[in-house]
Image 1 (cartoon, rainbow, N blue to C red):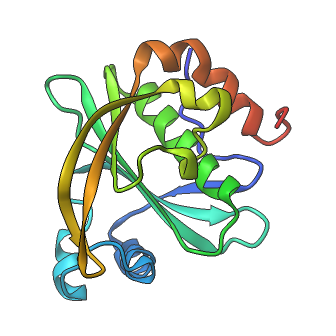
Image 2: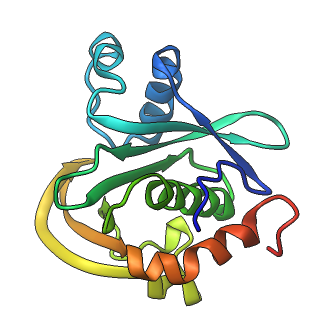
Length: 182
């Protein structure tokens, strides 16, 4: 049985409400990877079309270092996930945030897949490396689909399927939880 854990040894996923829109905007702006509207427009739209949003806080300092979002589940049983972590953070912070976000999605909804869309060919930067990489299925590559930083980039579509997560996800999440075997 999956439980929607929101805490690891390193991070807390704090539910983001409308009052957290400016903090979320600042995280995205600091990354420079997302074409953002004006602050006022972003704040008006913050949380719309999103089933869950979390600020990623470091447990030891309480500093907000990221934003995670899950889309509304589709009729086909899919959820889009996004994990944005400020530069300069240890990769384990992004890994914990991504693992907790995927686990939250599967624990909360009877969905078949969690999708990530990224310009990266794999999800290693989100902690899916080594044995964890086997959880990820490469679904598609859309050539030259994204434009930022003055150039086009391929968009890679990755998924994590429920069957794989049900078999291994709880054990992985238990390993990063406070008191778990990291």
